[in-house]
Length: 492
Image (cartoon, rainbow, N blue to C red; front, side):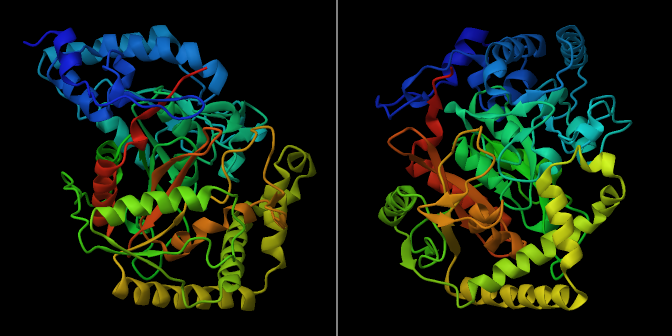
């Protein structure tokens, strides 16, 4: 049997050294000597082959978390170390008897705090539920448990998942993996920061308005929003949800492996990098200046597109043949209409005092829409499906930035303006993500590098409905021609 030191050495990656501004370093220049640096799939293989014990791994992760989580605040409601070590020992004992639980056997994992995990705190970031303990796993969480994961705690999220800035009155704000004074994005901010800081091997989350993609960009990791029927049981190809659960990872293969666990009908076996020669990509940019965009974002995206073009793909600047303000009306109408499911909060003034003002505002907005407004929004959405179909007849993928701003101060709830343009709602600054969300189509965040201040950014690669494998295989090919995912943060 290969010893532990040899195993670690054999999984190391080496290449020429280089550096980038602020708190980043490339792991391709560093021999992997820390267990927490292993990819999720390498960790899984090390456990199954017994090159590393679950106890060793749990000790390494707990040490790393205790050192850095007080600064970044990614993982919340952690279980006691003694209890987790008992679970890790049981995982080793099971493996010694030939009882293999699944690809996450004995692997530490933290669930986004919008989902219940039996016996664990389940707050949804709301003071209304700060002491609630979940009685059972959600169906999605049961899938992860059934693969052998050890749940160490939860990942932080904004209250009820509202907003792409992860803060709440119970646990506070989560910092960016590359600068903890900046936001990690959201709503899967704790998950993304946990990945970027190497406190988690892989992470689950959800995406309505960019909640997997935006924190993926802000923490230099992969965030994948699947077609809405891949993970979610509700809906269909013609009746698509506005949101879906999905995976995040430090690389594309890890992300895809968790997606296989979450998916209703797993058809996402080993990925093959997509040949980029003659692939046609529609570059949407800032939608012909319709979107306010912080300076530097477009430049980073276009530099990455040049790498893709150099690999043989064809990049064309184009625009949807659609009135984009209609998309915003459609999005806000349908999104806020859903908030009527939380109408009960308006009946209890004492509860209102404990709620995020933006939630109350969304509920009030939902009340203001007529049936005709909702019908009009659904008609616009149906027309948007047709426009997407037209675009995908011409192009393999649509590409645009993942966010309109770089990570900003975690003390700022949301940007009030971008380049002098006022943001008229608390979520207008994330309008860039709604093209995929309204389409219910697969979209992956891939990193495009860092600005002069070392702030990460990404771009969305969007495919047609049901083309999830191809989108991920594009991301894998992109990973092969860029080095951004190997630029680790120097942790504070």
